[in-house]
Length: 307
Image (cartoon, rainbow, N blue to C red; front, side):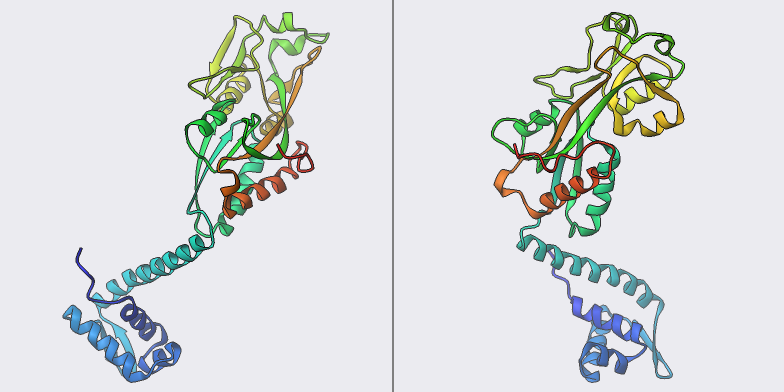
């Protein structure tokens, strides 16, 4: 690999001369002598083989080539500073990347708010977000080492913090025939209608979510697909209440009047895939998730005991 002839310090000095308007001003800002600043810029131009600055009166002005190189050098200096900050962050134990596996039933609004709050505090940590359904989270833990899994299923041997209580609600479009029933709907009547079922994303061990056992069912791969199909007037489904608020408020969807089971509740946990080796970035994200879930309609479980 060819070593660069020009140093980052030379580019930094050039930037100071341009930004401050002259050699004397740059010297004062950099706490260097004016002769040192002048020599550094002269040496830079000598190494490149052409001038970057011209002097007009008492002010230094960039040449056309100088303007192009200065723009690039600003990015270069910023990248170098970011690299040093990342190195310092890693030295403090911050993870360079978080792999987060999220069950699609987790309240989307709370997740998005937590991620938005996390980004400016992340210290450069990148996030890989993977959506799963049902036992897909357990399979992700079995096959790899994600930092966090947000799921209702806590495999044996893993540490987990409670996050939120999720309500799954039986809904159908406002004009669906089930809403014409004058008495609470039993399972026999419900089984006569088309049901939207969300397929488990796990490949080795999978199940269908909320299947009544009826012959009339469509299977989809995501909560969003199920919501959109049901909202279009096709079938009914149990879907996360937190993701239905707008559709319910607008009247596009209505909850079904069932004899029992109209709402199904389960707990969501943050499962630490790396156990005691969990880093500060993952713990920060969990704190933000707990905070944001306190703001959503579902009930917070922060006071519940650890798994």
